[in-house]
Image (cartoon, rainbow, N blue to C red; front, side, top):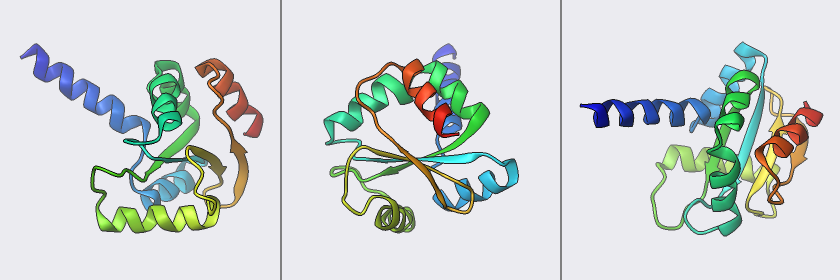
Length: 138
């Protein structure tokens, strides 16, 4: 029973930190007044993306920062797992506009109406340093 509770709790933490549907994310941003952090990633093949996930996105301090200040979308372009077609189309539309060169990972900060606030870079910095970089853009 404890394992089931733990898995459900973990699932809620994970889903609370990133919105998969960009349309819902931008609607939520308009309602909340928050900015949208979009991360273009290749979760199952891109080594820097995997490091970003492990070192920053999975960090509890970063997750708390996101819950309080941002709406986050992970626009994932995996090679092995399948993404539902409607989501894939939304990710591709975002990539056409904000990541036309196809860089991975690419991290952009947007307003609720999809205006570019800034581009962030992951260079292996600590979660605290990354949060500071995001705060400078906010």
